Image 1: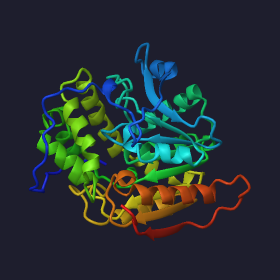
Image 2: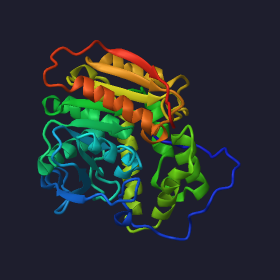
Image 3: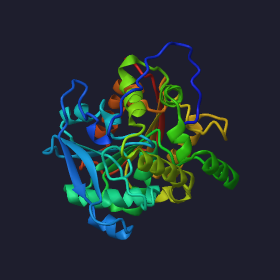
Image 4: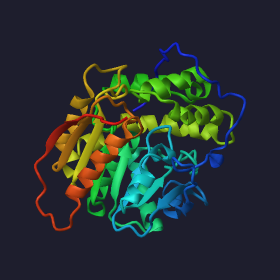
Length: 350
């Protein structure tokens, strides 16, 4: 969900201070460095609903637009669509139409101060975005906060999706009123803006990965260089408001039985963020089991040796597991879904 952790490694790291990176200048590229085609979707209904004024918009990328089945990838808290760079080209190559979007408040999308930033509101944004982008009955793939957003979408608009892929999803964990109050006091824009580069290393590398590798260093570089850019204050505010929305997750927890589509829940067994270690002991699998038990057609897969950002930490194993689910469950001829099950997979090639 969200990390407030200290870096424990003693290894020397490279400093990325000294430059300022605007969100709009972030390179959205494949692993080979090829730029993805970026598009903008205007959202007049969202602007009117939340009194945001004219010009509310989200940025997204689209690959293989003629693919028969559309996969829509939704990022987590504090991140942006580039966190799916190990998936977008891979699934486009498999024949899917692939779309990844920056939610309002994040990445290259608009960051309106008066937007709600609850997961239910973000789901409503996605609904309008689908209409603008010509997306019908997609598979919604969400990571962490994006998973809770995807759940909210499936509950509000059950007839508009083909399936859900919930990747280390938020939404299943229970928080007491006291826990919510404490976290709201602690997690502030001042905390985000005042986090040192050392702290960024801790929250990103230690909090999100079981195995940190040099190829991920762009995550640190970009996050450090965002500080002080023109939209950083609004980005920090969006993060804080989003945390409030994540904590108030009763809507999804109390309505899991209303999720009508086949649902794939996948997580790593070395997730350090779920359950929230400030409040709860226990295992990630137990939290994810709440979703598996509550959603009528759900499959739960645990990947061994993988952290919270499992789609990057164990990309090959993650992609294989998701592809297997999609191939098995999305046939239009298949009328009876297999029973819910729980599967443990080895991460394999890392």
